Amino acid sequence: MAAKTYTEQLESVQAAIEAIECGSQSYTIQTAAGTRTVQRAQLNTLYARETRLRPLAARETSTRSRIRYGVPQQ
Image (tube, rainbow, N blue to C red; front, side, top):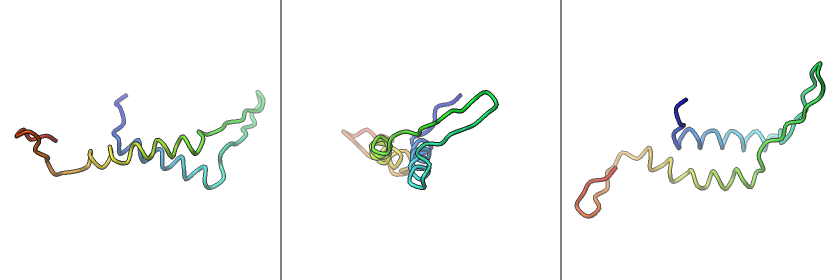
């Protein structure tokens, strides 16, 4: 399995945030074998991850090159 890009990771985090904000912080699944409760990550953790991923995703999608010490860098 290939690693996700920062942009893909940011989209996943934002989808998780949206799901929680729409009321699905936790949910219960009932099966023949019993009941399971699933809880999503905490919002403050997701917000912190989103804050960290935003500049990384922006840099990843940036098309301009920077020149640093005379050497072009992507």
